[in-house]
Image 1 (cartoon, rainbow, N blue to C red):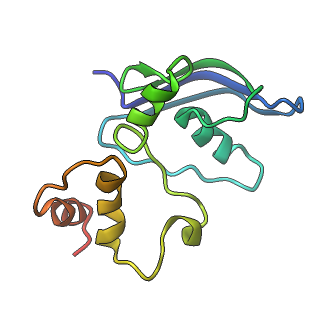
Image 2: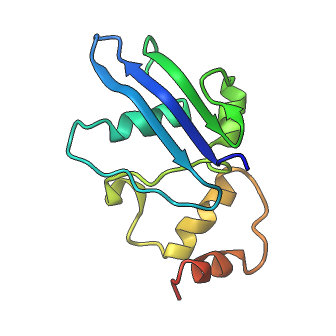
Length: 135
């Protein structure tokens, strides 16, 4: 079975010459949720940006990043936009940058559908939250 995310031997060097990641391997199974934790500067944000194809211009990336079998290192901008939020996504480490406390959790879950101009199936948000153990 193909994993949802496969990162093999990922090395990322920023245009400044800083090597932010060296030989990272990561496998995430379909349906699995993963949290990247570590101290400031350990490369968490760089991993996410590499997977999402959001690294700055001039950044050198070597290794392999597959999301659902799609090679993120060679994907076009259009392909990346189609995959972000549907096949792969993340929640930023700053909760106030990612979630507005004025809105409900359900609103934030529904936002992914709206961002991709998709019709939200009736009751889907409730089903997703229930599956996570959130009433």
